[in-house]
Length: 173
Image (cartoon, rainbow, N blue to C red; front, top):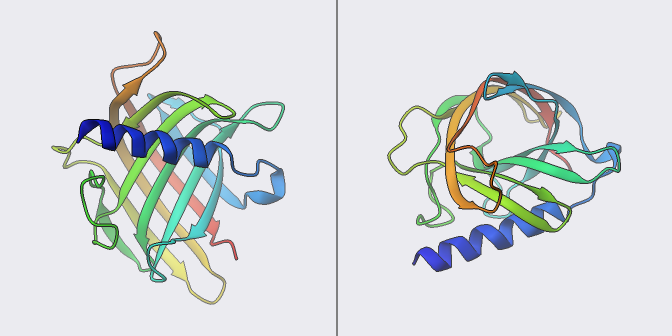
């Protein structure tokens, strides 16, 4: 089971690292601290492929060549104002009500480290503070702690804390 979950995480990360990287791909503002330091990143939201009533939010850091080097992805987020605890979701059905996230770093199609929420975590959350269905814009905030699922880097920290996250983005067509 652990092998299947790790394989799923690797395939997801490779797929996400392979996405377009140009500036018109991202829309909105994001401020967040990663381990107590401002984390300069770009944001994009997309319609969930699982349900028309849900969205995904992707937050990436990009190098000078336009290559994604870090990504924090939230998935299965309801299109509704509310406070949502984040959950460890890889063992859950794709259409359940749990909202999950994954953090990964690497370079281009090479995955270095992958981090997930702990199954015991009860402190991580994502809050949707505004959702405008006509403009397809969403605002919110988040805090979370992720733990290594796979570690490929000797310098990978034992956990990563994302704090004071605030965002405003539009769901892409």
